[in-house]
Length: 390
Image (spheres, rainbow, N blue to C red):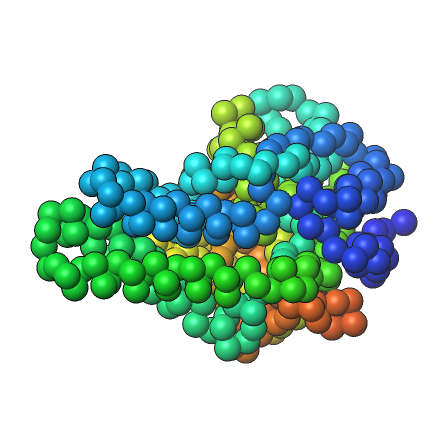
């Protein structure tokens, strides 16, 4: 019997939230392991250490920067501390690995892996990774409709002010621009405190979103796509489902998954598809993401998907688009030059409705873009296999 998208969505969203390293995440892990086992996959959990939410990271970045700035009048050595946290901030918000994700407090979270190994000869096996994050995000006003539209600009401004703080620290130690450079330092310190409060207030006041759209929809699409592909019984097709945690902390689970496995992958015989937030708007093949640095999806799976959008089956069901509000788990595949297709759903304003909001609930889900994502993913995989065997 085919996997029921509606049933998966209903059972996942019955859990109040799926916050990273919380008891609710544990309940979600058990549910998803059961689904994968029922589908005949070999199932395992891969543990990793992570902060529970991005609030921890924001407080470390802000606190470290503030301490460095506050110590400048005492010792010029503090300039090193300022620039260390400037660098960590730039890495983190340009979606690169930043050691800040290793700072206390650390908790154990789990990636869930389901595997249907190929039965054919090793040298002819083709690996397909289907992935989605199952964790849910803290509530944040930064993801409201107006804020989403300006998210990238706001983030660039904040990063620029962080860099300005480092430059101002250098100037003050050198004795340049006094006393105005001191006034600037204090102004920036007040700004950083206010920013940290605003960014994390939603979490402390309202907790986590239910996460129906972000990202129970992606999980449902992954399981349904895997179910279809496994039933093709292609002997050389190796299927791996990867359901990650801590995406909402900064794509942490996906980072550890890629780092743990990339050295044994044959990149010429593999591809990945990432499903994220598919329950409102129009299915979108992602071509660009990034903050200051633009991330381009230029690979064979994305090329095949774009070609399919010109066909009668997908012309009215999907589009090509960009997403510059945070990023996707697939970014670690792009950075490691591993072929990956990123799928999401965007509305007419290029936004993801209701993400990180209290109303991200099952009653607002549209199944049409989820169905389109499953159909498109299946055809992309089959065309990729055909082209690889030609």
